[in-house]
Image (tube, rainbow, N blue to C red; front, side):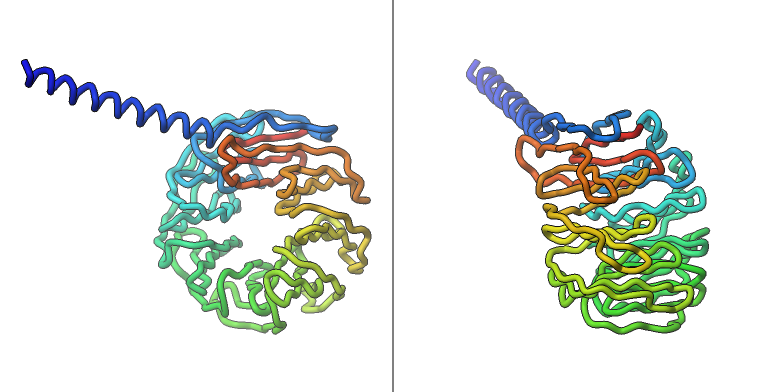
Length: 364
């Protein structure tokens, strides 16, 4: 009788512990993933759909030639129908926190995870090739061209993988950390402690432009614009070049601090510093306007309206090209006040953004 009571006691205790574990786990997940509703104030676009995922979103990519949105989380890539949010495919890709966005090119998606660089069919998510990465952790920078998928890791090396089969074509060392990579007419431009040019087919060095400091850059053929900085926090000036003519177009003194963000729009450049936005003429470098901002970390441009994700206020601001605020969307943190990735991209007429585990699409 005593043995039966003892056995029932242990079984009951075990079941209670299991129940408490799952109850606590569910409560934690609710507190992490539950966000109060977003607030909308006179925003020019309206919500077309919203999707909740089982884990936080690391990056969002708009497929350029198909109405598909690619979502990356720590466990997988998701292909969603851009019109409805319907899941088209899911492909496992382990990624512990690196928010490098997948690239869309030629009907395929190119992405990096902890251990692999991969190419997927954008229609069904089927893996075309998978190539091991030598260094599996840390941030990465990527670019894609007709011939190659480029990956720069914290190993101070840029790898050029054949876009068709994933074979390594060549690799080159960089002077430090993560570089920004742009490709134009079979020339690879690497932004690091200078601007370095390499032949895309062979990796052979072509020319280099040496300048001290760290760079933030953007490229829209034929313009390559970048920030000269003394370090990652002290900005000195902006320069724009015509890379096809190998010509410096202009330089403009521009002092500020914070992690810089530079975005080429149509005929303008938008630059974010820690507490200020600058709007410049692309062809002349003239500063058209500037305004106070609280840490803009993402910029999109749709129908002559600027959308700026302001992390300090957790707002997406809608601005005219004159800098006038049209409206906003205000997001909110989870109940545990955890840090959420604030991610945004756009198509020709829709704004796609994610906060925590939620994905939103806004359009006309």
